[in-house]
Length: 180
Image (tube, rainbow, N blue to C red; front, side):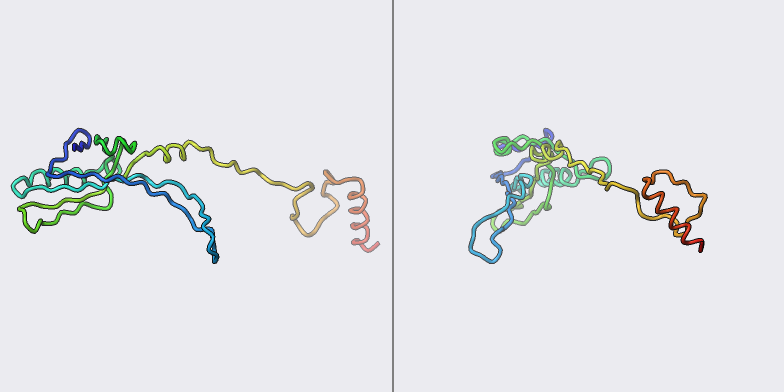
């Protein structure tokens, strides 16, 4: 089995790649025994890689660590183009290191047991979600005029926008307010 990240071969003994897809769902049963669930979307696919690197080939581990620690502009983790049969079968093209890299000493061999996880970047569901148009927010308004303004009114205020009935009521209100 071969694993290439941007053309850099990950070398080791017994390379195994495990691909997985997490499907999020929410329980809709409440307090009942109903089995209804709500589909909450697909999470990025992951590739879990396990391999062994001999102590005398420590340079391979250093190369792997430099790939895992690489960043792009802005301090973001580097995105790699992946070449692997399992990744291709799962439709994974681009990945980033995630969840760390572990290396433990083997009990019987003079070697490290390496394990790391690569998460899919720019997955098909992610692309589809970014292409969706958001629901437009519509301005709501009610008929009539806005409430507010100054509490005291004077005779110099224009009566624009008032109906004939409202204009008559305003004149009566002003006449009563003046103490006539």
